Image (cartoon, rainbow over all chains, first blue to last red; front, side, top):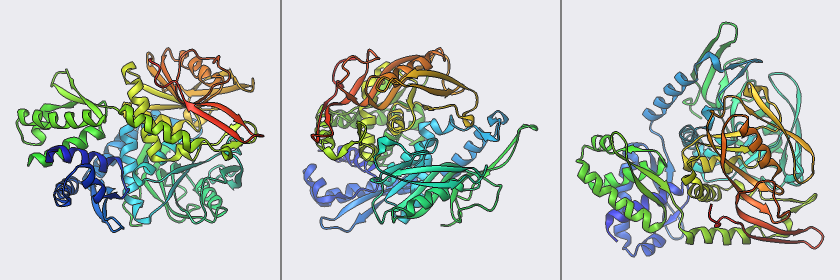
Length: 271
Length: 271
């Protein structure tokens, strides 16, 4: 096999298996090539990925020795995405009656999900989450995209108890915005004891829903290691959760005056 | 830039942009290289992708001339996946009270979503869907994964009317399994007139939910071009929808006798 062909295969395998240790010994066998040639191939890929801010190839210290691909996004691409998205979202016709903000169309686009998934994976990978949690419905796609780049499963808390999930744990929580008591539940089988849980959601006002998810996770003897939301409102500025990262901040939304003000969130604040 | 580095970049860009026309002129400029060299690079990538059953590079006839990456999965990998998955799913402890079958854990795994997304995208790409539709909640991740490889948005029908989606269209439908009348709704803004809609869901018994989605789509003057489900029950064998493709078939589930029988679905039946 020619080097150029090997490089196509290696690039494909690495991108298709983020955060998955790949054994050099296995790959050398698969490609019938010496490990030294393979290392040279990987050095080329590493160089390009790092130059482009696409990812890192980390050496994995294990029994067989291997390599792990970790997603990266260059700050330039992040800022371009945030700027574009703010422009795209800042439209008065996104204001819905009842103080809702329409962004379902944006969260339905593959390129947006890919970018958000990569940005959250990059941000939270150092915290080594082993499961991504969201609550139905609109945050699910973001949780799926983030979990893909973190190579871990995602779980969805249901708004009510569902028989199709088997035995479940339920909790009541107070929605921070309208002060109503709500229920959410999670299948007993879904989160192993001791799991490190990353919460991902689309929108956060006061943080009541995230607080509810945190309480639910405690019932599983697991811990929340981070929270990422696509958009958080600037008001109330005191949230019910102490630490979260948002990509965008909804600073103002006035239905009568038809104005929307969106800013970058606190994504760049260090964890 | 060395050829090997260009090949890493090209492979990455193609994989990250399925079904997206990429202009040769733009790439030649970006890499400061002659189009003839670029064509040689692409020929190498095309050869490897086709040998591995990873995808096709189609020439795109447009103003600027370009190339489109289309996802493929080799029949060998498909069959290996189906066999593994059947073994993984055939466990009596997946039987839940009330005739439900537990597979939430399986549909939460990135490698499963990736594979199912690729298989559905490969199967339905020739029908040129321009939106993927599912109903909340458990089919959403499959719809997201499929839409990613088809490079189109996904939309989620809600089980009830949600104010946070803005003006919606609702329909009542009869759930085929328990004969109850249910409601689903879809945001007015979510599906343009004339759209070609691919329905993706996790589970199908009689097909009442899919029939409901089809009725809903007609209200948008759009058309359903295909339906893909992860698992369908063999009984009732007369479904309410005439044409669908399933990856798996739940042939038997006996709570008392603790037996489950799962087979391959009708995925390989020609469309």
